[in-house]
Length: 419
Image 1 (spheres, rainbow, N blue to C red):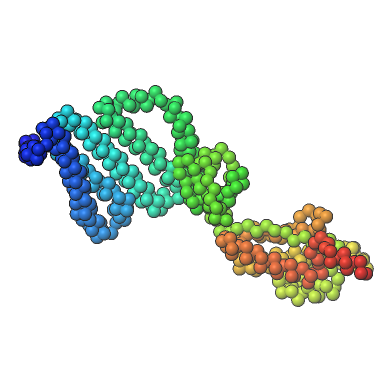
Image 2: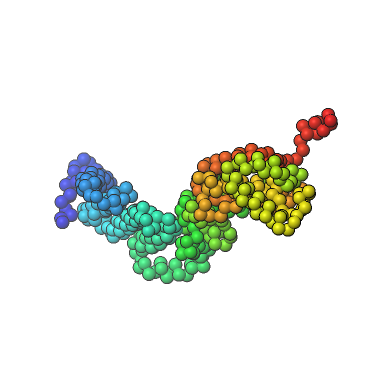
């Protein structure tokens, strides 16, 4: 190209009375302004024409990965190459009076292209991450950790390339200097390195996934995992607060993952009713006749009564005292009733443990523990199932001439005083 093709600008400035020395600098300023305007217009044209054409073509396709390219602005970042091309083509014209500055301009243009390349690669990684998160194979894996590590590598390598262009030195020079700074880098990126190693262990051993319910009391965390990245894991607690925990803490410390419960199809119910021991007694014939009217235990009482009657007759038991021989008790029958009630409930998962047992008696009475699993795991539904269950059992206890233990209240003492 002929660099004298814009010599008219110098003649025009001289014709306006500008001194020759000043005209050279004024011309440079005008050309730089023109270069800026041309670069901006070129970039605008590329975005309006080129990018719109690509978007229109992508909308016609049935695939989703190309839509992700548009959403993550990959093509927009590529459009910034246009100004660099304009600078390469026009630099000899703009700096024809300052030829010594042209190499520096090219260095800046190369650094600018490196920045564009870095941004484009980062956007491509975001696209790949988005596509992977929506793929069945990778959707529950801690992808943030791996992509963050890749981004750090891109930034480091990109930064070295930019410096090599600006300082006109080989990238190997900076890589060798980087090796000498290994100790410093290890200190600076200590959390990143520990987090990366922890992410690999968590992923390889399938210890943690997005949406897992985890509990870490030492950090005040109890809720769902909503984000896993290279350095931290975010847990949204049930009160909607968010706890941020270092990734490596899940390797160095203990935590409880409730995923096994979620995958099992049941959620454990383990609660007790304390029965007042003074209300526990042998069943009289009248009590048994009344209990036979309870449908859930009717067959049990009839069958058990026959077995006991046969045993007492064979062993010639003196029936004048109930303590002799074998007899049914109201607490035993209630325990059988409670178990039958659970097994007839549609809300209980009968494929898992279901039992009603006695625990160690204490000063608060005899604990009767309900140990079973609900068929529903959602918190609100689960609590509703437990409430309905214990509403019924507590209301049923007096039917067996039993009493629930509770500490005396002021009302009890007032009644005692009035006697």
